[in-house]
Amino acid sequence: MTNKIGSRGQKTVLIVEDQALMRQTLHDFLQNAFPDCNFLDVADGASALEACNAYRPILVLMDKCLPDADGIELTARLKKLYPVIQVIVISYRSGEIYVQRALAAGARAYLVKDNLTTDLIPAVAAAIGVPPATDSGTL
Image 1: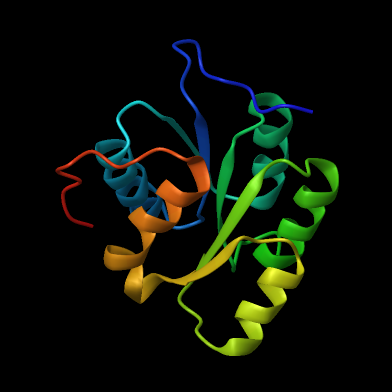
Image 2: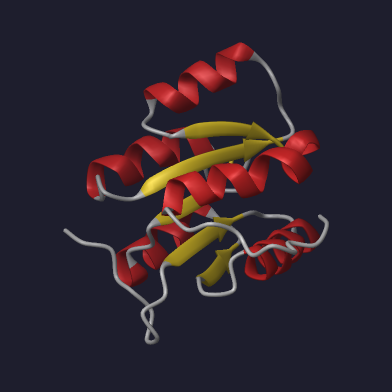
């Protein structure tokens, strides 16, 4: 199974975040940092599954707490369905137990939302193999 590339040869990244403002902020921040990538966003786990089936993103940014799913459990499900998709779990919750659970589920990283301004761009760049634009703005 391969990752689908956008119509202009773009790599696709899916943002799964239930809070509309955070979802839009992440989308804008990442689109600015990686202008040659295609960013899609959804608000819940069911939509995330549908989007992964339709678009086969190279990377999913997965919120830990979704209205219809636990992001870590959804990560495990996505990795079974689509082993090539990489997942970075993001959450306001910190703690080693969450990190361990996310990594055990197949996530490549677990990022705390309080640290996204410094941690997100390098983590996404490493996951998709694309360097960020020189001026990535602020989150």
